[in-house]
Image (cartoon, rainbow, N blue to C red; front, side, top):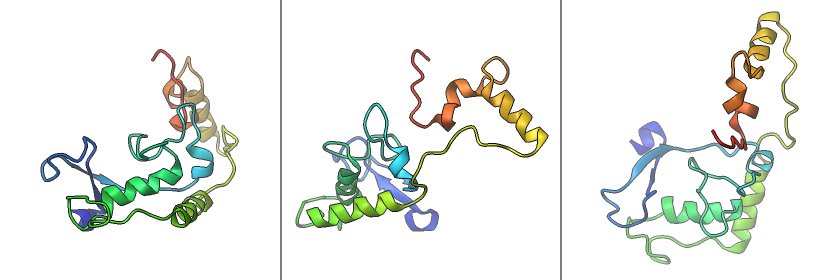
Length: 148
């Protein structure tokens, strides 16, 4: 499954009982991270927003990826099943990931050309009509939904 469907093995519940406690997930993209991982809760990486160990930084995300995915066996013994990245490698991986995708935030809403598209956008953004924007403000990026 991993190679056929591009999935990775994740141990979200820790590393006990590794052959039986795991999930298979698709790989999240790393585009536009310079403008998309900043949030009130700190950087959010991985599908559940807790993809980085330690301080939760993008730099630490690479360390978590090595421990989680680059092992020779499920034993995950440092120095035997994998080696941790050096500071130089962590700096290089962070710089590379931050260089991908857009480098500035979008100015939303985008100006649309067609009348039908403009009407759909107006309905989406109007909280008394479509009510979509209540939960999907800025497409959900860094949303603080308060009491919802």
